[in-house]
Image 1 (cartoon, one colour):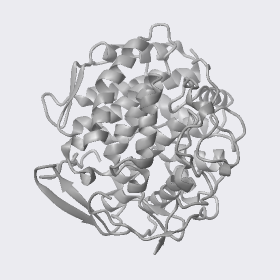
Image 2 (cartoon, helix red, strand yellow):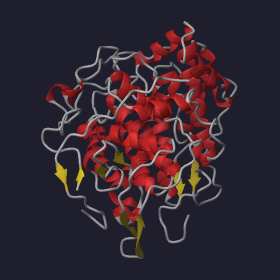
Image 3 (tube, one colour):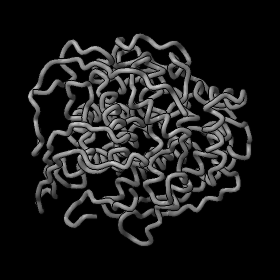
Image 4 (cartoon, helix red, strand yellow):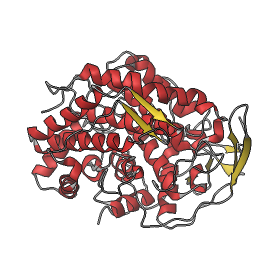
Length: 465
């Protein structure tokens, strides 16, 4: 018997299943994906004041070759990943990270040349890219580079030379359709064929498209899938078991460390973008993601964690089929990291005032976090936008709007944030194979958040539930 969260009477972050009427028709806040106006102002003020660790985070940004105003775009009409010729997707992710890093650098330093460079890169791609093609990896490309493009564009959406309408068309007509189709059909594979990170790239893209394009239907689609989707990326499938010690296992820990870190980083990205629009996925299902992030942080630091054997069906609908069982957490390299921890740790410990000892240790170890180009030349080093030490370090009790946080027990839907703020100047026969080659700070808070909820029998997925 295992203790699982989500039963009636659960405490922290128990979420309503729909946005309250008071927020349902409110306009989206801009900037409002990974960074709000308050976030950007805080970064600029802290760096100007010479405050730590912001200055170390900014130094990491300015040292990155992608953050230089001399960067020139290399747009392509068709981007291929996994198959097709040429496999040119590196041009897209390098340019997106250059646009994001220049835009972020502009907001911190006020140097107009960096804003102009970001705009030139994004305009070049929105004026040329018409298609993302390839193997199943085309869905990864659309999801990853779609949510990243939207985040870079959100930072310069009010620049007078930025082609906002064209950028919206690129998100709606090129990136979003592939991501939405994946959530509906999973590349015509059985739904458990793909590990959580596949779903989560798609959810991130659909959510980012909805916010960037002011399309509430897309936002609701992403939120609903996060909560109740059939694939392995929805929260109860990605995090199937909550243990007595309050840690919740990430199913992909049975695969390998790199992909587990990717998945947790993507789930955090989805939660942060939703939070900045007044939707609390961080607290959903009794803060299930907190329990999981603590689990993955402990495991990645070299700690022992339990793992419940998980069997998943694989294969194509109407074609080949098989199954795969993960029986224990994979081995880890404690030196491996991705720039994912500062965002998650700061939310739970600073915004919410909760205890998260493993998260704080992981974030401290990774500080100062870099971004694309700091974690190797292959695509895995560009899966997160990064620079969390600069972007997400925050005073305790500060929410996205700068106001004091409500009580953590307030529920899963936050009051809508202020609006109207303006921006300132593989393996054979495995459809999910992606290629393995891509693959101090705070004082640790004591203790682990207690588990709430009733007792449930563990269900092992051998097929649809």
